[in-house]
Length: 217
Ligand code: E4P
Image (cartoon, rainbow, N blue to C red; front, top):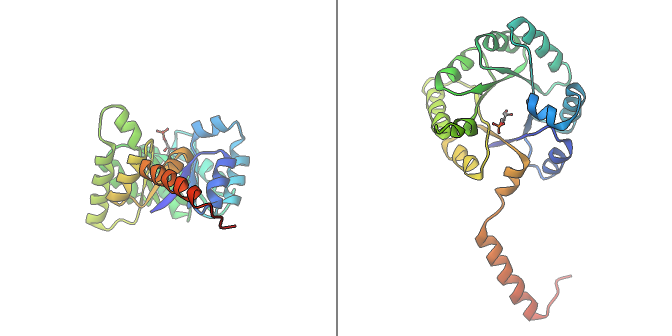
C-alpha cells in the first residue's frame, strides 16, 4: 500500500520522507491555509523533496478555469497530480488534463457512482473521503469497499486513494480492503507504530536488562 501524507507542512513531510514512509503528498486549500504558505512556492518545495505524486488542488468552479489552473499547477514539477473536485465541471477538467498527460486526482468523492464517472474520465486517483462520511453517521469504509468492487469488476486502473483518514483503524481497514493508496495526516501515520503490548514488553526487557549489569556498547 502506498502512503501519501496529507499535509502542506514541509518539516513534517521531511521527517517521514527520511524514513521512507512517503510515496506522495496530498494538499488541499484548507491545508494550504493552515501552512500559511504561498501555494506555488510550497508545492514546488514539496515536489522537489518527494519523488512520488504531489496533489495540488484547483480552486475554480468552471471547467475552463479549472483546466487553466491545472495546467499552471502541473508546470510546477513533473510529479504534480492536479486535484479537481468531483463535479461535472471537475470531470470535464479531469478528461482534458489527463488526455494532456497529467496525473489527475479527483477529490471529494462520496459515492461509488461518482468514482465510476471519475475512472471513465481518466482519473489517475479517486479520493473517497472516509472521515467526512463517518462524521455524518455514514460508513466511510463501506464506500472504499464498494469502489474496490466496482473498479475490480471492470478492470479500471484508477487508483483508490483512501482520504480523510482520521484514525489508525481507518488506515488498517483501508489496507485490508485493498485501497491502492491512503493519505493520512503525519500524526496518524506515526500512531500506527503504537501498541500497548510493545510498550509493556519493552518496559519488562529494560528492567531485566538493567539487572544483568551488562552493556552492548
Ligand atoms: C484528501 O486529499 C484531503 O486532503 C483530506 O484527506 C481531507 O481530510 P479531512 O476530511 O480530515 O479534512
